[in-house]
Image (cartoon, rainbow, N blue to C red; front, side, top):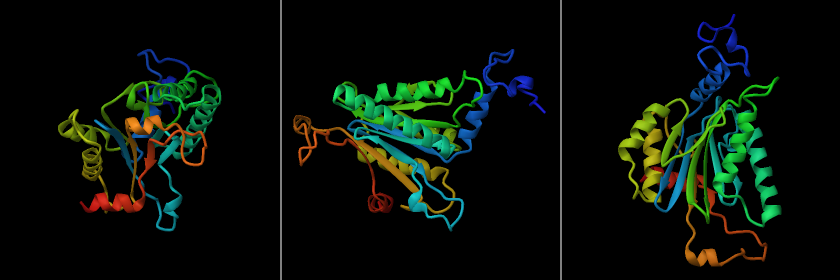
Length: 255
């Protein structure tokens, strides 16, 4: 039977309920809130995105689980919600970034790529025969136009720029914690420690380098910007986003 809140409209994606809601989008947000906690913090000299990386069984090879993904050398994404939906979106994002590179000879600014992803998610809210994507995303990147940027994209296709944000099952407590700890002058190192402390607030079990995944955006120096190519003459820009190795995460957890 249809839900009491949405009535018959809870079955329909493209029809507004009398209260002006698209109930399926609310259901998609509920799917996000059941996902593991992810967060992002914008620092004065970069950005950190972090998430819990848990497997449902000890028999699963957790080295194959990827929740922080590299889109292109200057942009990375972390998600909360349904993994298969994220896999589709990350493939679309990478294809879009490569298409931008072929046309303009550079990778897209963070806002441009975020808009592309948000458009794909929005189209799924007003098309027949589909459902909204059951994920929220945190998109972190650096570009010459805006510097380091952090965006959150929700299943409705809405996106906002944030100084710090959290998504997933513990997002309310995590945002409260971040509001108390955040300041505009925070360094990237302090932001990484704050991210770990925030995740620890709602973490179930032991936090180790195998249960946490972290990605960082660094701001290139003037000298690095003047160097247009990497060694070997590939013509590719110097990467500003990378995922921390398990050894690096272990070192941060030990501090």
